[in-house]
Image (cartoon, rainbow, N blue to C red):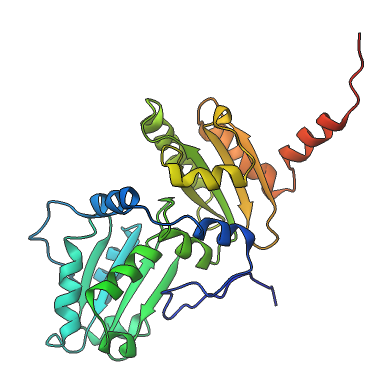
Length: 286
């Protein structure tokens, strides 16, 4: 059995267990500053205050709903009068980048191995279903459900923050690619568009992450990979199992460069090893 630096729970997935994984501990040392917290809240809050979860009345409707979303959260309820239902409804307006559905159909519940009441999060990026079961539902409050969604909402490209890092390291996907870039950069939108396209090529193999280098608290991530500000933007790839990593400063992000960098890492090529070897090569004075 493979050894992991953290424990993973399919059923609850609320917290990462104490970890000896150096990078995870390093990231968790970055506290959630007021500015970052405000940015997370701003990105999730939106104008859709009157939105309601989509009613999923049969299995084909549920399958189509899940397949169309990067992140879907479905309330499977046998009883719509329990307190958890109103808490679930309150999440819809809070997380605009998550699709919410609700079902009471027995066949739908059976399709997703649900007994009793449950809330499940489905992710396209690693094809995971994470469940809050009946025991969790009984003691559910808005804070706990919000945390479950924030930690586990991994997208094709997930922005790093102290909440999402827990979900990233709880994923079965062991290779993470980070684009370290200032979101205020004029090149940001174009770069993200190409980075998103590249992410689709490695879906299920590599988790794609954005680290905003414009945030002071993300400086620890940059220093972990021994990058200087002058080398940004840059790609950094990391394997959680053995903590192998590599970096590639990029003048601009292209799908081909990202693909080549990832393919090289997957086949064992390490650019930093080549650079270190070059640095150790004696220089001949002319």
